[in-house]
Image (cartoon, rainbow, N blue to C red; front, side, top):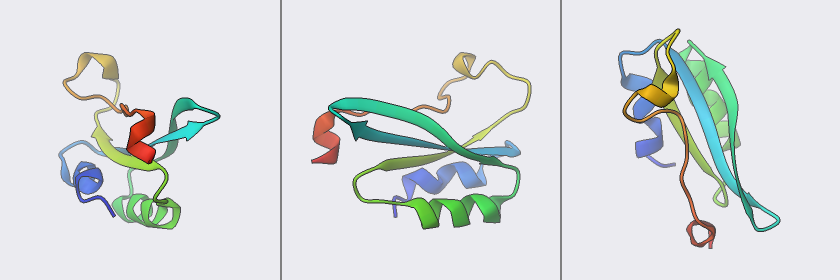
Length: 84
């Protein structure tokens, strides 16, 4: 389990989002998998869905905010080499 991926559980923002990055047919795919205010549900979902060939990240985000305007919004950046 990636400790950095769990950092979003402990920030001040109430809404928690799990984002997944993966390779599919030589294309990078980023997707939102799960959203909750409940930290235990987020942790349980993360642990149940963690796979070595995928990249999961948890973000704590504020409500009613254009997420592209904040410093590090829910996203993943990856290359094919990240999964090899």
